[in-house]
Image (cartoon, rainbow, N blue to C red; front, side, top):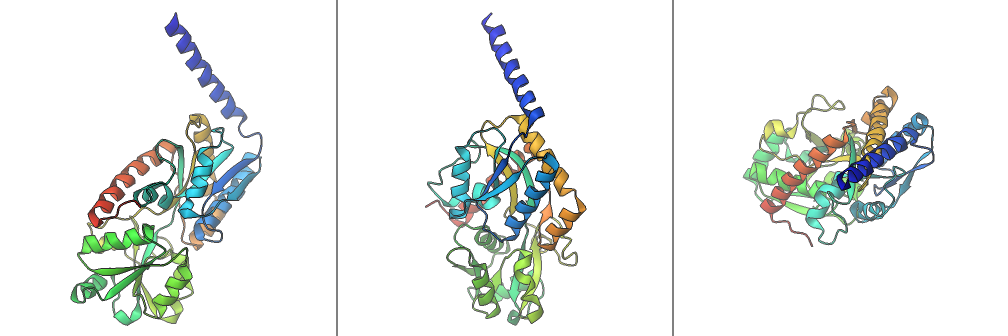
Length: 323
C-alpha cells in the first residue's frame, strides 16, 4: 500500500512537470548574468535572449548582476525558484575554474544548479608582440626555451581563464614565463602593454585583437580550441604544435537552480539550439569570435565534470589553491 502511494506521488509529480512544460512559458523569463556588459560573451547572450523572445512568445530579459567573476549572479540565481523563469547565463570561468581559486565562493556547481546548455564557445587566441620575431606557437616555445624568464604574459587576474591557459601552456611546453595579473577586467590595458612590449604574450578573445592587428605590432600565433575556427581558418590550433596542451574551457551557457524540472530544461535548451541555428544569429556571433554550440543538458553535465576534473589536475600541477 505504502509503495503504491509513493509510486502514485512520483507519477503525479511527473504529470505536473509535463503539464508545466506544455504551458511554459506563460510570463517573462529572467536571464541573470554576471558577464561584463559590452563583451562578446554578453553580446552573445543578448542576441540569444532576443531570439528566444520571438520564438517563445514571452519576453526574455537580461538582468546583469556583474562582479566577482560571475559569483554574485550565480549566488543570486541559486536562491531563485526552480520554475524556468529564472535562468543563469554563465561563463565557464565562474562554474568550472572559479571554485578552484576561490575558497568561499558560495555555491557548489554540481549541487546548486541544473545544467541546461553550453550555448556558445569563446575560444582564446595566442597573441605575441611582433618584436619577438616569431610567427607560430612552435616559434614562441623555442624562443621561450632559449630565453627563460624573459617573457611575460598578461591576464585579467589570478585564476582567470587567461591565467590558467598561460600556466597550461607553460606546463605543456616546459617553458618559463612571468604571469602579470591586471586588476579587474582590464583587457584594454593588457592590449596596450602588449603593443608597447611591456608584456609579450596574451590570450585574448578574437575581437580584442582586431583593432591592433593592422598596426603590425602583434601577431596571432594560434587558437586555443579543439579545431580551427571560421574567423581564421588559416590559423592553427595551439594543440597542433603542443599535443599535450590542456585547453582551458572558455564558453558561456545556461543553467537553472537545482530542482529545475527536466522537461523545462529540455524545452529551454531546444529553444536555445533553434536560436543558434538561425543564420543571422550565427553570422553575428561569428563576427565577434563566438561559436554556436547549443548542447543538451546531459552534454553540459558531462562537459562540466570532464573539464572540472581537467582543471583540478591543472591547478594541482601548477600549485594554485583556493584563497
